[in-house]
Length: 360
Image (tube, rainbow, N blue to C red):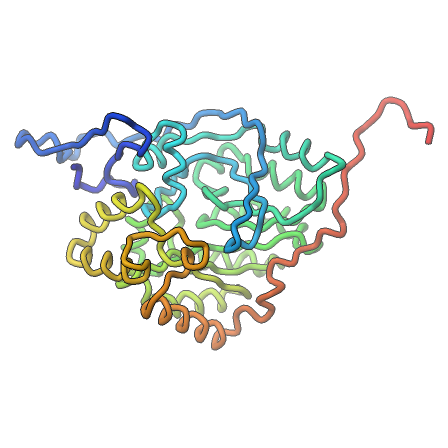
């Protein structure tokens, strides 16, 4: 199996998806074909247009604080090796490995579909989350601006939205976000799991650097946009020592709310993460995986709604206590129960332009 990291990519291999009948496995034939040399071309990002049939996804998960979300893109160029959305690429007959971060799909008709959905008389306004699966501000957004068109529609309808991102490029929409914030229509959460630039560079290779994300929090907060930080993922024995530092740094940058998520390794993500650990932190691989199993009931992942976000056991309880104490000391989450209580009272459906006036 390929063991050499690829510069600018999180995944080391292109593991076959769970739906493929034929499984491929690389092996060393002693001809040097497994380990690429410096002249081997790096995998390029390929973006395809997708004509979506619907745009609002709905869920009933009891551990998720929203039941509506929009994902402007399939796949994510940020390349975060731990991303729990990687297995969804198998539905497209792609690998959750390199394919997930190099073969992307852009929903070019997202704004049009959203407008139709919000215009339906039966639609009831509820919080929509942007960034539930893939990052709405991943690098291709700078060029395609699909997220920007979605925000324009939400602003037009006075519809509330919560955004989660790892990208500093969200500041390119700071003007419209500030206008929405004046009506209590938006919250922005910056996801940050480590302040170590060396770790972040390989863990999430094309996401903004930790310092840039903190600076983004500061810019958004100064513009009057309510912000928060999500400490994610918390990786035991690798990034968990940064929990307190992240919370205090985020509070200093203007964040008012905070949450955390323990590392999740569903389906193919387990082996992709193992490969990453073996390549970048070989001396910690066994220790990290053992701690993960201790917090997942002896398994690498447990999808139980009660524990999948925070884990269980002694180490999970310790992380939970550390997080709560650090939040209290930093003054974060002063209105924890109301952090997503955005305004739905001003929701309105703009009247379409008509060539002839109505009689009544």
